[in-house]
Amino acid sequence: EASIQSAEAAVASARKAVENLTITAPFGGVLESDTAELGLLMNPTSNASCAHILQLNPIRLVGYAPEADVARIHLGARAGAQLTGGETRVGTVTFVSRQADETTRTFRIEVTLENPDLTLRAGQTARILIEADGALAHLLPQSALTLNDEGRMGLRTVSAEQTAQFVPVSILRDTPEGVWIAGLPDSVDVITLGQEYVTDGVPVRPSFQEILQ
Image 1 (cartoon, helix red, strand yellow):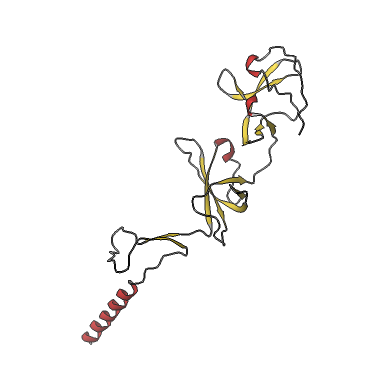
Image 2 (tube, rainbow, N blue to C red):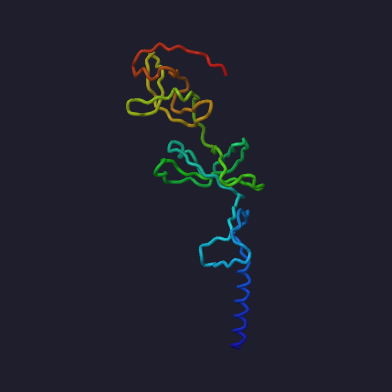
């Protein structure tokens, strides 16, 4: 009986050795690089890699949201990714960090997209758009922004008394056409030229110019 058990143990050990001849990954993916040559002796206990496998479906996009916007981003929210070539993909938010980056003071977010055809590649640049509750915003030239004496960002507006007034604002989005600004009332007259030369309470006589779209 002892010899039978010894033989069974030897067979099991041999089967295990044969299984170790075939290297498998714990997930499906694309073989990006094969660093091991045929016949090379590999030590399974070492940290040496034999291949680099990419899991591209689903694919994860990583971005960083500013402090002013992170509270409006929720897990499961719909998100879009606009690639540099103009193509758009739709996914969902799967991670929102609770801790800000120590250097940038922004919060890491992750968006997961389906990529069955593997056209999205690791390391590509994309613009992430996340669905959130709507907010009143105005599109203005970036040059209209200014700082008050305390260093706070805002705009110079014309009050009902025809005097200059500083209004603090926040930037929702920066686009080639201008910046989307939050923090202004529905209707407001914004000083877009000469705002650096007036302070709160100074009488102004604005002139208006029609902008043709």
